[in-house]
Length: 148
Image (cartoon, rainbow, N blue to C red; front, side, top):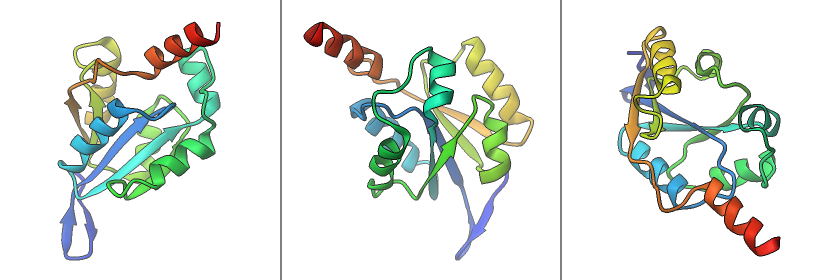
């Protein structure tokens, strides 16, 4: 495991990638869980273009505004731009020790690819319970019903 030396000694650096569109309680939950498992919490905000490529649609909230929301949270130490679904690329810049994801990825082909890639650079993947009551997809659907 890569431990970064900051201040008094080794610290665990955690990383949480995400779109963070229409920030909601599910986002807050994963960040709160992650904060408890690391000394330094870095959050990656995926670019508008990368989100469109991954999900087939652009986010409702633009990148600069999503980053401003994340930067305002006291539990977050740093926010970085995440340009790719390849998390090794962001690891090469940030050098985190642990990557956090929702457990909706656990046991999936996406999750298995992520775990394999992260293991290749000595990073653990830790999953937290996915908040099923609220998601950006559900919010988009609800807004579509109200606006349509």
